[in-house]
Amino acid sequence: MRFGNQEDTVQLPAAFGVTDEDPRIADARRRWRAAGDRLWPIALSDGASYELAAQAVGEIVDALREHAGSLEELVALEAAPSALLSGLGATGERAVVQPELLAAACSLRGDELAAARARWRRAERIAAARADGLTWVEVDRSATRVAEMHLATGTTIVATADPYLGDEPFRISEMVLDTVSGEPLAGPDGVDTAFATTAEWEADRERRRREISERLDTRDRDGSDS
Image (cartoon, rainbow, N blue to C red):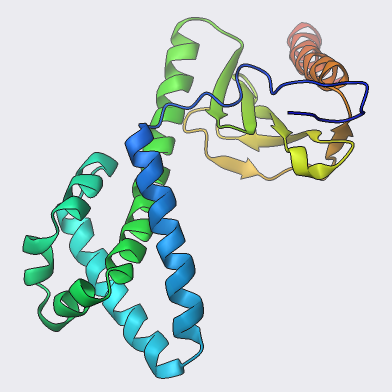
């Protein structure tokens, strides 16, 4: 895959494209999102249809919250939904005829479960890194994004790579996370620096890491933020 200048043909760094999500779950979540993308535009064309669809999806989501406490359970339940749908009366009958309703509900419940799992994993990684005496911890990683948090301050370097951003597909910004939970305390600082090559991009990541660590060292020595 080509990024940046024509002379600089690069691949995404190894950390990108490596995720810990089960491929079956990832495939199911893509399929659920696609079903929702088909359902809602059609429903929006008619107010009454939208209201009925929203009500049905809401009822199914409520049932899924009771019966699917993990993404694995959600995938299994969607594969054999008869018991769940039979308990929903008319809504269940509609979902049998219109399977996009179940898929859209699975998409919503899947997002909830994925967010909860991500929160738990962030907190777990932070605790493990602190126990190991590390200075930085990778709190988030996806195919196009890596976020590294400075354990002492919560300052987080967010590095992204997007081939659709033209000649400068590599970006870096900073945000502040809670140092225990990893939840955002302050969003991006508004300075989204763009780079054309991975060499420039990775050099800036290292520079930021060094400067953030040095600021803490200076504060510890002087007892101030100077």
